[in-house]
Length: 127
Image (cartoon, rainbow, N blue to C red):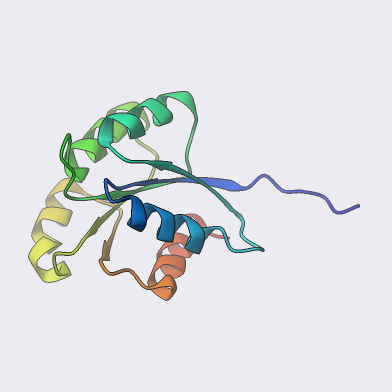
């Protein structure tokens, strides 16, 4: 019988359900070391973060109730060691200064390729 290692938990937050589904599917490959939870708003994400610990949070920058920066600041107050990656359709050069100011741990430009996704997750939390 094979030993089962505890899978690292990733929270994906985006108000676009299709994007959440695509990222969740991309992260949950058959041999994946990751367990994915999803949230469709900043408030829903905060509720989940208060209930369980995540190795990584990936959040959309633009959401109606709370943007990704506001969510990241809340996460930093609750669990400062949790890495947070912002996702946006804005090109990185437009976001670079803001990302530096708010000290985001990473950035993914939409549309997100699986290669970019896996590379960033591997860099942030390993396999």
